[in-house]
Image (cartoon, rainbow, N blue to C red; front, side):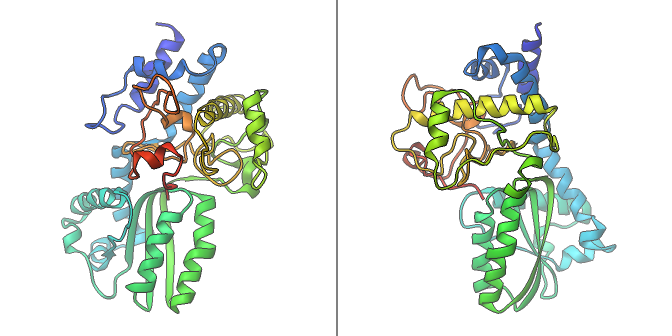
Length: 349
């Protein structure tokens, strides 16, 4: 087998559990069809870097299960008598949109049973902490919306809230902590403290862009469509990253820049096929700034729209039009197909 063949097989293995039971398990042929849409002359280095990154940023159920089980017995969270802590804890089920919290609650129930001998039904008391679970915090909008309503309508006058997440992005975390949750507490005149726990943390604040853990280009590719797109974004223009900062999930600066270039060029190409796309639909993922959110994270359950369009966009059966792109990990949405087509799908929280 060639090096390219080995990389195709390796990537397929890493995302093997993606939406298991809903989609056919990906194989090397599936990855090959996706990869052939990118620059032909950089296929091996592109696949090599993507294989390196996805091996760290694709979160499997096994990883999540272990994280939750470890949290249950974490002394910093639950103290030495962790069973007593969880007996008193009040686990919230308040998510307004999507299914991620329901799925996380199922996994957490199993984690409690394994570590404590009882599940969610055995939890809850007036003096216990409050527990909010979700998968990944991106912009923070979903987490903030859920907790704002809870603070206003149901929260006690004083409480500790432990927010348990598979991952978070620092920009969204800073925004909701410093503004939305703080304002909600003040408006409700309640003393509520929030503590965040995460398996993976990705830096994506503009101030720290040079050390970011997301796709953040250092240069604008020499591509007419990309240049036209970048020049058109006047309100929140692209602030280029300075190379040489922390590598985070990337193997090298050269490899990182290759991914950023390929996903940006492909994302602009995808976007150009859509009639009047919304501004939030950006080449490197849904977001309000620059060329997109750029998150490299995906989970066994779904791929966020905050990831590059070229990872998840498209319809395998389409032969023309806006959906004529073969996705590596087809995204499942909770919006209508019409909204997804026009770039109106809700920004993942």
